[in-house]
Image (cartoon, rainbow, N blue to C red):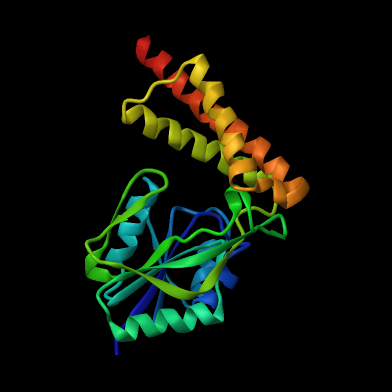
Length: 249
């Protein structure tokens, strides 16, 4: 019988962690890699039977690789604290691990934003890659990290429910965090910003989010999120611009 572990990254996730771990209870082991939470995340995770390892945050890829080192499981499923595994997905994840087919797997993820189940726009369903044989995966990347593997891709049945935003304070906390990380990533890659591309990228980001991806079909929330995406795109280029100015000095 193949051992299956679910790895969860956390930082101040006391509102999510118990329900998240309960949705992963079908696994042989749940490993939580915590970045130094100042709330009750660690105690609550341990109370649900998870193995907790505390590691200072460097970037998301490092945290995911640290999780790999905390288990000897044959198969690894990566789960975010604000996600829940459906019963159908749980059965198929277990099936894939037992079959031990040398492949990695993606799964449909449905985003539920401020209580609205999103079908369109930039928050429409996506297909993140989450299930891997332990010896065939390594993560790279500062933000929007990716797994490096040489295996073929397969698909899991069922879905993840993703609750990325339920409060605007949380939305803008992530907004600030991710625009900073993206600006640093672009700067390291040699990209540079000017007044023209600050606004042109933001404009086309809005068009893609609202029209090409049909965010318009999500009503009032679709428009609000598309406008915020305009400012998200502009902000990461503004931050890149000021990184350049600092370099000039």
